Image 1 (spheres, helix red, strand yellow):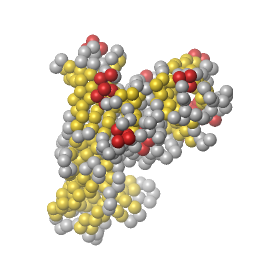
Image 2 (tube, rainbow, N blue to C red):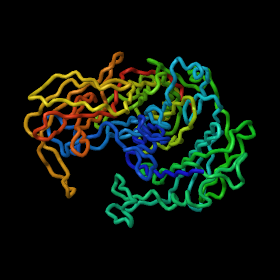
Image 3 (spheres, rainbow, N blue to C red):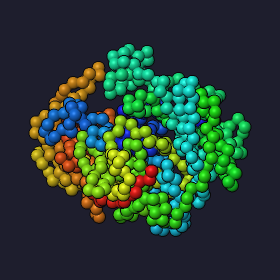
Image 4 (cartoon, one colour):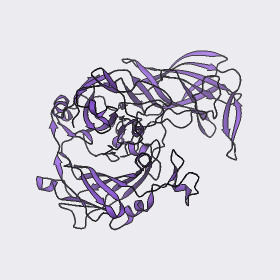
Length: 565
């Protein structure tokens, strides 16, 4: 049996959703590889098949996008944009996933496996199966979920372990558990760590090594991680894939380290009756007692309208895209869950995507004349199912996205209107290279770079007068300031049916030995307007390629919820 272990270190910026109180199972916009959803995409560490971390957006080293003719510290787009598991929304200045679309199992940026067209009669005849902590799925086979959360405490080592999700489809069973360890300590600012490569710097300057010895023992020990249950060997089976993530932001917020353990098991046979749904247990290193759990059938609905009504939510649909909202009263505010359905295959989108350093309209909820924003949280304690592993062999699935709204406890027991101002489509593919002639001054153009979700139109190119100052690294690895000629490329988003706004795009110029990233600009409304592209003295043309486009559709989705207690 093949075993693949993935270790993920969740650092600042991980799940930007945590900063904004919004969270999607890690992963954004179709950019997370394989079965890794948002959780791993904004993390660093040892990952099999990890993505390159590139996201549209980011700023120059000097902290600004660089206006045409201006100077920038490094001359490139800077760090890849801060999106999160799904290319997802953060808050201005934040990085990550705010409930935006993660990429489950390499499906869509919105966590959607791609809904079928009307021609797929067989799929349209399948009911919608609702898994509250996971999403909505369609399959020819039943899907089972965890009957109730199970928690264990290990007083000797001050650890608490909670099994927050278990899902079974055919012979595949995935589990998610959260481990809280208050014994982890950080070194004071300025300390010399014994192994600097394993430490990260927290926002207050302290040094933290979140990977501790437990991590390696969990996978290597004969008592590490095993599943027992009906039809399984008495000593249990080990996972075929597993992931261990450390959340340093939770440590900064609450003083304890939070670890996420996710694993995928292969059962010898699919459950066939109610007896096969009980009697499971997860044995985890350091815990004397196993996490005993049972599964239950998920509810099925013929329509999304029926699903929303039965599950105490509401929906809104525009152009084949449906968003279902459900709410819950919690200590920190109103926790809203979003479930997405898209009739158009291969058209991923995010509920929230915020270009770096840009202030744009974000989702709110309102009641009685009061409007409540997304709550700023250092870490989201309601993160119950990161969804690193997605169920496979489904006909269609859409994940769940979480967002916390800042509503005082004495104002929670009422009806709220959910207001989503628009959604952002994600174009993942890399464009065909485009070659443009360098003009003497300015030349108007009409060159379209198409994606499934929309197109980027190059509307003009301007030769910037005089050399542009740019930072470049020399052979010794030192940053040097040099002057280079540059052109400015003017762009906008176009679509035959929708009025789109360009919110993100990477532009790279072909040069000897590879590609150099251009520097981009935003206007005051969060619209990407163009790029400054550098070239060598004597060049007569520039060859460009584009990828990771973000098209914002200013189409409001409005729903009404009565949060449950």
